[in-house]
Image (cartoon, rainbow, N blue to C red; front, top):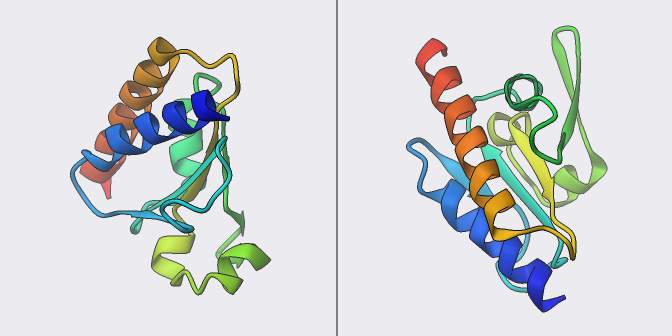
Length: 120
């Protein structure tokens, strides 16, 4: 658990340094050691996931269908506003996740978010 928490926190720190608004979902300390849920304001999660492809273990926090967004019950319960919720991405780490993999994930996501912010 200590290793997963450290890698999760390294990922969070790296992504927090991105320009633009990023929000941590959940308690800063009392949360699962292997999961990072963050929201990118006004950036659709599905677009972020398309940009990062299979290079990073991630999933969307809200399901997008045509012109509507269906928020997960978890995001609703956490009172995450829509402009944040639609940009929610969950990242996962494991006991075998390396620092190099985290650093690569930070770079991949950073590049994707930077590209998307330029076109938004």
